[in-house]
Length: 606
Image (cartoon, rainbow, N blue to C red; front, side):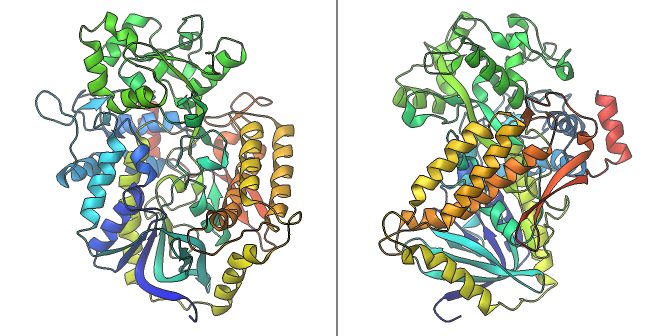
């Protein structure tokens, strides 16, 4: 195409996190040509922020664990709204993918007899998270990155995709630009895999990095793909609350997995006050038993701090709202108390939680071996995303695949800690495998030159716009969106607030049409943000509309006006699609039926 550099591949992977790299490795192994497009530099993916571990039923610490228990825990955690086939594949294949990662060079913590060590985590019945201290995601990316660069994979660093290309109803490639010079690039492809991660940056308080804006979800939506479960946003219970410069930064669940407890400003362990019926009988009601559980006592019950994330987050918010919070609007997470139980507690904490120790010491001036941390909920993960086929990861658009956080189905209404990293491995591998298979069975589609001109004109429009007083600042619109989402579409939701959010999102969408930027195209953050706003607004509207449609409370979605679960809504997914007029169409669709043998496993485990 005139004026744009064109690259041609069989498979193009958008995203270089765990899912993207695992997909690229698998596609390259199938003998097809592969490109990976990174928004940042290779190795700087958000996967490195996953700290606690990767969930897989290896049975190294407790021999009672197996794929059936992992499957049941995942389904229970997702309140049975999960795609059961995806949960089955995930539970069965996670151990294979972890051992494969180990064979590629990942160095996990070890048991005394040399096997991969596993720790307790919220919602998991047995110790299941293989880990590397509290830096598991970093080790995973290091391993996948090293393995990828020895394959026949081309890597484009600091490139951003702004639109997918289609012709005759199927994907033909992707259109983007390099961030260094701002020059447009065309990626002609038989298959495209979206592995762009989450959307936490559309909220004011988030554990996510700058590039988690929901771009991949929006790209798929605007290409015509269906989205599901967008109402289910996970607010991690423990993010930093002080100082303000690091508010929202993640505190791994591994702190609680190693014995950390939550207390209010009265010193009370408030999690004992509210144990859901679903987990009664499995959760301890006294401190001593919970401590024994975290130390590997197979006969003890889990402490209430290790209940599912949605429940713990709501309990923390209750304490804060009722005036029992910490000085800076959180609660206290205390790991220092274990000095009562362990003689060498400070050294033990530093060895088990090295990142957390340094994070609080350097950023907050808090020594976690001596004093409690202040924590509060932070936007962390979206269970919803692009609707995919359970086995192949293909979306509803031929040639378009999705894997990782941007793909929906596995986690249902709430994700268990550690399941995200095994999700990346299992379904990243499957997306790469089936995208390669699809590309071998098809030819390159023709690129529509009119589509290229239309996208180019739209992308350059901010440079042409308006004078002062008429033009809009992209950073101000981004800030306004984050404020409204935090206030109106947060942990607790109400019908009138969701309606207000939709109106405000639509008003922001109109302001985007007037957004302006100056300077040139090279490394221009104003221009980057101006184009990114389209994706952020799209995802925000999808979350708000889906939340308004689901009139019940389940998992990561809590409606104060409908606080109970509904049997009717337990049988449906909220599906969002772009209609022919360009509007957001919201539908209720039947949830995929659970196979009888899988239902039998769930019933037996109950």
